[in-house]
Image 1: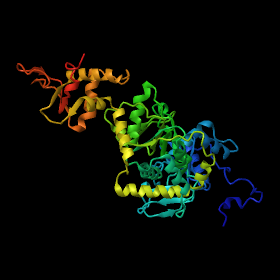
Image 2 (image 1 turned 180 degrees about the horizontal axis):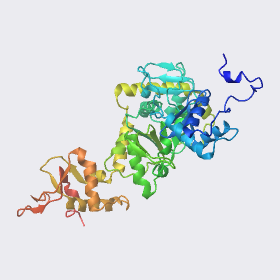
Image 3 (image 1 turned 45 degrees about the horizontal axis):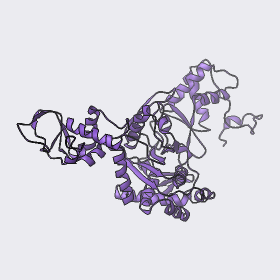
Image 4 (image 1 turned 135 degrees about the horizontal axis):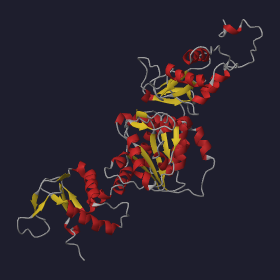
Length: 485
């Protein structure tokens, strides 16, 4: 029996015409909801429509979903209404009804209709020939029950290898970085954000980081990656395009505008920290309680100058240092050869993901640990000041008045030639110190005590002190009253 029996009764039906869009029997006397369901009944023979977070998606031929604007849906309805029985108001109302009728709770990288035995979305890797389940080593067919908005261009092949890729990594990066990079690549292939990390590729131009970025982008696929500048990330609609992305590339992470620096920092911390955030969308309703599935990879010749006394960002960063430049020695055939190795690189990345999950943490080599410590110091003037001028004991008997600490800090800031952006007033200095040192056992107290400066004369009962750090001492050689003129 024909899939379209209604056409068999018409001997003059032209089988060369496309099956969709085709004429739908609308009734202009009926309300828009009735006509919307007539449209959906006819369209279901062509492709499924779903609505997620107020956006409509249509199922494509490879069982992935493509975003449709309201205007595109209205245009499609009009093509099924050749006699123009529906006015423009009804078209708009029909789209609203379609969204209600086809609303799903799923977001990209989730099951739309999950079986009881459906695998965890966090175990699923998209390839153009199926969905690979990391937990079972099974390649499954692409299915409309899984909400994917595209697939990458490479095909899964469990026998593939990548000798060229492994060789080039040895030229670009010191070997202790290789396991970390392998694990980072693997994590980017799945929507798992539980490890709460950011990758920072820092170093010389033409040193390999751009090629590594390009390979990572190809593995994830063009539908599920986005490139954004820090200034744009800090903008009102900076998160709008990230709902269906697994990879967020910041390709030239130069310093942001002063007015946007704090917002860019907070958004990076929220995304990497797997926090639920509000997503402001242009000309659309704001979304609340959204967890952005993208992992952040930033590239720069030198790291952006963030001030983050809490150390939350630096502690999450996987820092890769590129020491060598190959300027003037570029291999113009390399991109094509590495593209041919994508199935093998995917296998290499899967090995890294499995190791990461077995260990429960990233494999960090000595160079990576040193780079992260340096980054933590660079983002925290308070921590640098403490390491050089103070002793952190965590002992309740060790007291340092805020006023004395701030005087020592101003002397240190002058010697370090801190920029005006890095210098802090007394109130901010106190807050920065607590943020940087709370985890090291330092606290802030305000009840009045008698205190003797251990580096000066102890005559009398001591001075009355309220605002003070507890668990901290000033090194004698940095005492403002004992410094050489």
